[in-house]
Figure 1 (tube, rainbow, N blue to C red):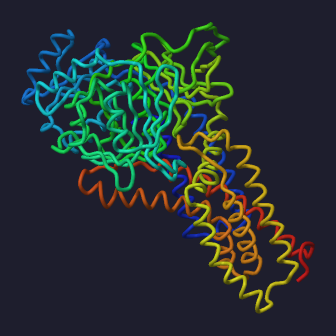
Figure 2: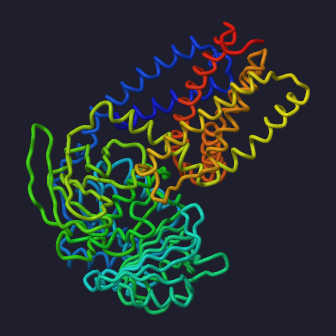
Length: 619
């Protein structure tokens, strides 16, 4: 286990301890002095963790093997019926043929061709492969699975790598409410022209036969792609294909050991490559998904296999406990013959390296930085900044190291571009970036995906109590006026934060929009929670008031942690012995909850102090 992982686990333990205290011993956090002492301690620990991450990130890049790096290795088991094909490929590629993954990794290859028959694949095999790639290999490796229903079809898949066209690129998106896609759409880029068509079954099948590269985002399964609620494309519907490259962000489509596998049918019918997930992904954490066509600008030094490895890193930051996003076909496929940009200059100022480019197109830009693995922090002025030691997904910039080079995917609007590379991030960058991401996730993203409605529904419960208290004339109007001011202040502050941060949200690849209902919910919860708090005579009553006013943050935390933990513990761990999903989002929202709780504790302390002094409300 590397130092950064240990540090991250320590940070998670700290947050889990705080959550335990909040729910089991809440009166301890309602004491202002106790809260301040704890806050100081946690802030110091947070800064130390951030500084340590900046100092230790570079240790990620230390190779584990003394063998010289190898460009390509071929992996196949002796007992596999396709082993003779692996021998043929290894001879043709002049590459070593290894019988197991640990031996293959010892060569530190740039590319790995895994020749395997469908019958030698399974859930367990793919999990073991993903866990090994995550735990034992410090560098990313572009992996392509060479398979097919027959050995001849697997051979043809390998041979198609050099026959891919580059004229027509298509992004297909099924309706997705959380991504604000109300209707399915087919976006086609060809000869410099962009066209949009409604997504229909007939049009999708036609597009499969004419496109050179197609992405699909929508529902899926081992034997189908879901175009809409009642419209599915099944394996038997796939026509003959002409060397198309297909990339999907759908559930469980890459289960080629199933006879009805749609991924296997795609490559059997003539696809040059197919990328997809073995298990169910969480949409919004694959850089370039939806309409950005991330393979479009690939070139020989940054082929589709490298893009997939960068995307895999994003899934590990967003939801996946281990990588389960794989490629069928040769990872060396590229759609362009040269980089999609021109270098202007490269210069250094101290330890900072500046890279300048011009004529950069809009879209997902693959940038290959030779000997760049030692630079673990990248800033793209006006776009974003990210670190190799990041533990939160960034939808605009992702990176991996492959041997001594760095490979960056950057979402760019087009035009000139400058990158600033540093060996480590500034020590203060980690806490600021993580805090902003946490607040963005809790108060912006989750509010547009139903959190606003949930908060409004929850507010009905305390509203009934407050209405009853007013009916009984137990609440003074001066207190009501005070709480209205506080509720309005909370809503205004949240609205200002949302407006400032909305253009800079990077925690998801989905479209992020402003939710007016979230401000109404913030106002109601602020008013009702404050009224309950100042009316209370015991710590339990004050706890209830605090719970009401912080509902938006703690409900997200509980939901994320409970759902992920429940699925892992009940559905996945008993069967496979490991988790499928990580707790990145629960960890992320927990930070916003703790910060919100501390701020509210300070505000309530000041309110009660004013009431006790008789300067705010006359009893």
